[in-house]
Picture 1: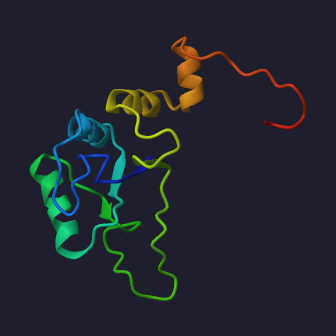
Picture 2: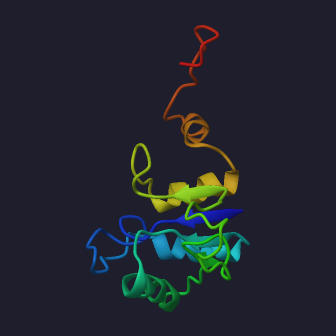
Length: 137
């Protein structure tokens, strides 16, 4: 699976342009996802020197990205078909609806290949929704 991961607020606390304190278990989980065979893309608003600092921070801790703000490492941002929109199977970002889940839950969802609603039902935290009509809401 290709997983795009934000940096500020997701791997580390928000302190942009500085690098904040690591969010508990973020690096450990990302290393495990790599070990499990997933490809990680760093997906960040950081650019230039600030982006390189984020890449170096992760690399020093054992997380090596398949690509950075690109779909593959060799993509250089030139050419007519280039788009900054990343093509990934999954995005991990603190700006998700509902915010960032804890990294243990994120790992469990990926390993079990399930969505958050299904996971919460399985854990007994939520009840299945009953469809009241043909309309999905």
